[in-house]
Image (cartoon, rainbow, N blue to C red; front, side, top):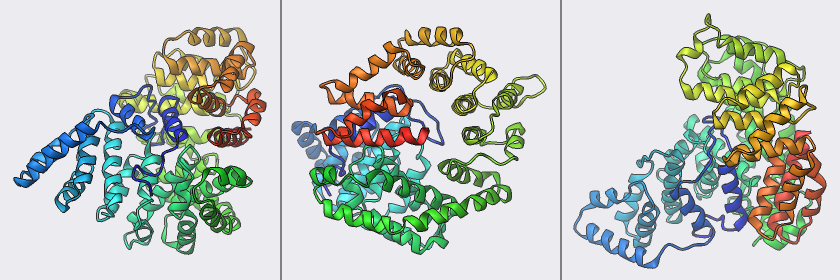
Length: 512
């Protein structure tokens, strides 16, 4: 594998940047990150091929060697503190290449805490990459556990791709400890997410992902059903996207034959995986009814992956002031076939009545997460009550909530068109980029020519970043009126653009 992870193509960096800035939320945190810290920008620049200053690297190595020669290991550990120098120190320790320097890296994993959880994950990725390069896998179980606890962050798939690249990762899948086995499956699922979001396809071949699926399938009885459902669904989605792309793969991959071999291994399991998923639905609902609340989250993730509506008991969970996973329940209502808009809005508003004190005691972040999840599901339940609630959320003053509410407008002909357009045009003038983009996308979904043209023209830009941003916007915002424009880009001579456009088309088709 290449020293700097294995994800070096420009598209990777662009895709990660989009997921951070343009409405990337994970299941756990539902965070909306609207800007990049200096540390995040630094790492993205590194992935674009920018080297760290050689004078800084040499100065840091001299300083570290001086400390190590004098046995002052704690001083070296003290250099690994939050900030732009963190990756410099990690790289310096890697280049020094002594057992002591590797021990310090291993000991320091997960110990750095900044105010930004995204930065902490970058630091974890830095150390993980260094340990992988020297095949230091003693703490791989600890690394995977750390990844799973932070899986909701935007760059978790990037971290996962690094984790599954350890030579000993297959052994972790066979761990005698159930939690370690299941966490390893989750890590592989996250990496598969990343492969459909811009991470280099070289990872699929070099990590022998097809072989990993075979290993898991042969031992499927040893894993949690819920985590297998997500993994198998991701595998099927991956196959759907990369069949028929031989010309692009031949042109772009260093070892296209290795990629095809791994695809063949996964392809041979496709029917078995589909059969498993069909039968898993009943098992998942049974798990929900018979398990403790703490076990519900993984089941919800699996049901979401299968696009299953929640069971009838979901209404009881929403009404229970103590139930901790309401946001997951709200999101599952996106797959309810019967329009429940009025009932959902009534349930939501009842939480604010004086006779219900659940929201009084809930923490502010939990309230926001629930509002975001509610806005997300209301998109699929058109009606006057729904539209009124979304407009209320769009005017809530909270950027994350407003963004999700705007993203859920424009999917159906408005009941009160003048009020909806008035709100969208006002929000389009907002200085906050994420609000402006969400409002423009909503207007484009409603067919407003000016908004459609403003997005479409970016597809013809000479700047790759602008093109990828436009593709991403069309895909995630469901602007199906620009589908023909994506079709043209799917055959682009630029392989990165072609792959991104094909992924966007597949995503649009899944939304229909």
